[in-house]
Image (tube, rainbow, N blue to C red; front, side, top):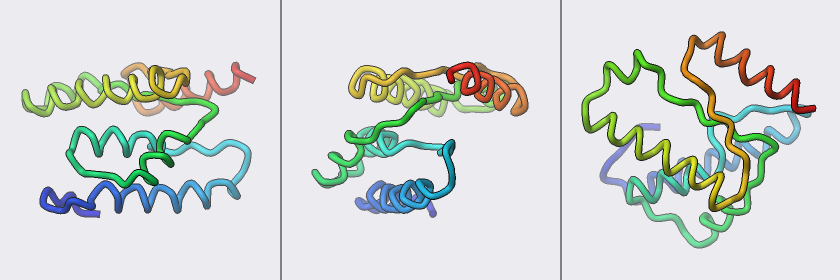
Length: 131
Protein backbone atom coordinates (compact mmCIF):
# COMPACT_ATOMS: atom_id res chain seq x y z
CA UNK A 1 0.00 0.00 0.00
CA UNK A 2 1.45 3.41 -0.88
CA UNK A 3 2.30 5.72 2.01
CA UNK A 4 0.07 8.72 1.34
CA UNK A 5 0.72 11.64 3.64
CA UNK A 6 -2.50 13.28 2.55
CA UNK A 7 -4.96 10.48 3.42
CA UNK A 8 -6.59 10.75 6.82
CA UNK A 9 -7.73 7.13 6.61
CA UNK A 10 -4.27 5.69 5.86
CA UNK A 11 -3.79 3.90 9.19
CA UNK A 12 -7.40 2.78 9.24
CA UNK A 13 -6.83 1.07 5.87
CA UNK A 14 -3.64 -0.55 7.20
CA UNK A 15 -5.47 -1.80 10.28
CA UNK A 16 -8.25 -3.28 8.14
CA UNK A 17 -5.65 -5.33 6.23
CA UNK A 18 -4.04 -6.37 9.51
CA UNK A 19 -7.37 -7.56 10.90
CA UNK A 20 -7.95 -9.72 7.83
CA UNK A 21 -4.49 -11.27 8.21
CA UNK A 22 -4.96 -11.98 11.91
CA UNK A 23 -8.30 -13.67 11.18
CA UNK A 24 -6.68 -15.91 8.56
CA UNK A 25 -3.68 -16.59 10.84
CA UNK A 26 -5.93 -18.35 13.37
CA UNK A 27 -6.27 -21.24 10.94
CA UNK A 28 -2.56 -21.55 10.10
CA UNK A 29 -1.29 -23.48 13.11
CA UNK A 30 -0.21 -23.30 16.70
CA UNK A 31 2.60 -20.79 16.25
CA UNK A 32 2.20 -17.84 13.91
CA UNK A 33 4.53 -14.86 13.68
CA UNK A 34 3.14 -11.52 12.56
CA UNK A 35 5.45 -8.68 11.65
CA UNK A 36 3.16 -6.27 13.51
CA UNK A 37 0.52 -6.55 16.16
CA UNK A 38 -2.77 -4.67 16.21
CA UNK A 39 -1.48 -2.24 18.89
CA UNK A 40 1.27 -1.15 16.48
CA UNK A 41 -1.42 0.52 14.38
CA UNK A 42 -2.55 2.60 17.33
CA UNK A 43 1.04 3.76 17.85
CA UNK A 44 1.41 4.59 14.15
CA UNK A 45 -1.91 6.44 14.21
CA UNK A 46 -0.82 8.51 17.19
CA UNK A 47 2.66 9.30 15.82
CA UNK A 48 1.48 9.80 12.23
CA UNK A 49 -1.60 11.80 13.17
CA UNK A 50 -3.98 9.44 11.40
CA UNK A 51 -7.21 9.13 13.38
CA UNK A 52 -8.74 5.76 14.20
CA UNK A 53 -12.35 5.24 15.19
CA UNK A 54 -13.22 4.31 18.76
CA UNK A 55 -14.01 0.76 17.56
CA UNK A 56 -10.59 0.49 15.89
CA UNK A 57 -8.85 1.78 19.01
CA UNK A 58 -10.78 -0.73 21.13
CA UNK A 59 -9.72 -3.53 18.77
CA UNK A 60 -6.06 -2.51 19.04
CA UNK A 61 -6.17 -2.30 22.84
CA UNK A 62 -7.95 -5.68 23.16
CA UNK A 63 -5.23 -7.59 21.30
CA UNK A 64 -3.23 -10.14 23.27
CA UNK A 65 -0.26 -12.16 22.07
CA UNK A 66 1.74 -15.00 23.60
CA UNK A 67 4.96 -13.12 22.87
CA UNK A 68 5.92 -9.67 21.69
CA UNK A 69 9.25 -9.10 19.96
CA UNK A 70 10.65 -5.65 19.38
CA UNK A 71 13.34 -5.84 16.71
CA UNK A 72 15.96 -3.24 17.55
CA UNK A 73 17.53 -1.25 14.72
CA UNK A 74 20.68 -2.72 13.22
CA UNK A 75 23.85 -0.60 13.35
CA UNK A 76 24.22 -0.65 9.57
CA UNK A 77 20.65 0.56 9.11
CA UNK A 78 21.14 3.26 11.71
CA UNK A 79 24.29 4.43 9.91
CA UNK A 80 22.32 5.07 6.71
CA UNK A 81 19.45 7.01 8.28
CA UNK A 82 19.15 10.77 8.34
CA UNK A 83 19.02 12.56 11.68
CA UNK A 84 15.23 12.95 11.45
CA UNK A 85 14.81 9.25 10.53
CA UNK A 86 16.96 8.28 13.50
CA UNK A 87 14.95 10.46 15.86
CA UNK A 88 11.67 9.05 14.51
CA UNK A 89 12.96 5.46 14.75
CA UNK A 90 13.94 6.00 18.39
CA UNK A 91 10.59 7.61 19.14
CA UNK A 92 8.72 4.76 17.44
CA UNK A 93 10.73 2.12 19.33
CA UNK A 94 9.97 3.84 22.64
CA UNK A 95 6.28 4.20 21.83
CA UNK A 96 5.93 0.54 20.81
CA UNK A 97 7.71 -0.61 23.98
CA UNK A 98 5.43 1.60 26.10
CA UNK A 99 2.29 0.39 24.29
CA UNK A 100 2.96 -3.29 24.83
CA UNK A 101 4.71 -3.22 28.21
CA UNK A 102 3.08 -0.34 30.07
CA UNK A 103 -0.35 0.12 28.51
CA UNK A 104 -1.08 -3.54 27.77
CA UNK A 105 1.08 -5.25 30.40
CA UNK A 106 2.77 -7.66 27.99
CA UNK A 107 6.36 -8.81 28.23
CA UNK A 108 8.41 -7.29 25.43
CA UNK A 109 11.43 -9.27 24.21
CA UNK A 110 13.95 -6.98 22.56
CA UNK A 111 15.65 -8.76 19.67
CA UNK A 112 19.28 -7.60 19.62
CA UNK A 113 20.99 -6.34 16.48
CA UNK A 114 22.63 -9.01 14.33
CA UNK A 115 22.31 -10.78 11.04
CA UNK A 116 18.91 -12.02 9.97
CA UNK A 117 19.95 -15.60 10.79
CA UNK A 118 21.12 -14.54 14.27
CA UNK A 119 17.88 -12.70 14.96
CA UNK A 120 15.72 -15.60 13.78
CA UNK A 121 17.76 -18.04 15.91
CA UNK A 122 17.39 -15.72 18.95
CA UNK A 123 13.58 -15.62 18.56
CA UNK A 124 13.24 -19.34 17.94
CA UNK A 125 15.50 -20.17 20.90
CA UNK A 126 13.39 -17.96 23.14
CA UNK A 127 10.18 -19.62 21.91
CA UNK A 128 11.63 -23.09 22.38
CA UNK A 129 12.93 -22.37 25.88
CA UNK A 130 9.68 -20.70 26.95
CA UNK A 131 7.63 -23.89 26.63
